[in-house]
Length: 245
Image (tube, rainbow, N blue to C red; front, side, top):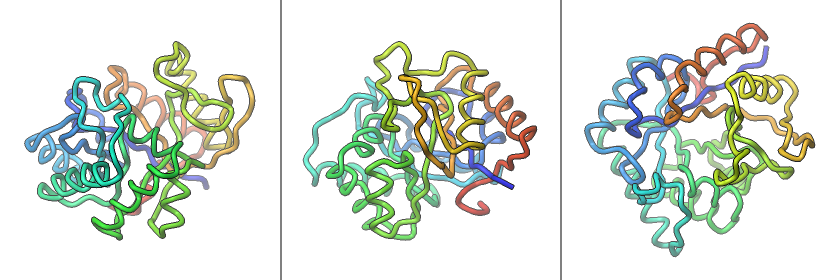
């Protein structure tokens, strides 16, 4: 029987984490740069543990005004230190098992081999036992796998894809799936047929270990409930791709 992990970005101040964490199996916790603070990190790590959800670090650009979704030009040493600082900050509040970059950093690392290698090296140097969650088939996934990290592939429930398997820019009006029903159908296609339809109408092959839900979406709780029900009806088990918490 096929299984799939459901991960969600949390600790970002959306106010839905208490309702959302019982519905997911992995939690990407903001590390204080694009969002979050010490109190939020402590609370979110505790909530994850209480719900037997595997905790991960979610480092991003230090750009709260744009929620880490604006690409910043940093040197390789600057980017490495930015990631190391955030991982160290979250570690002071508790343990986590994997790393998933946030927002613009995630997308840059997905496309750019040089950025991907910096991210992977920072994770490996901080703690080589950590896993890495990366866009399926991306440069970040390839770099993590080549470096020997426990690298898992991710797909998105509510984002639209281009013909090469990358997420299209959020600036485009068709960047998001228009309804929960459309997003749920996209997930079913991904999980059962290992493919997603691009905005051009072509099929793109991918086989993810995890599906991402965006925690800042006001309807994410209702969507997570619906998605779990749809997956269960399709005979798909929802469980963490990282093993037991």
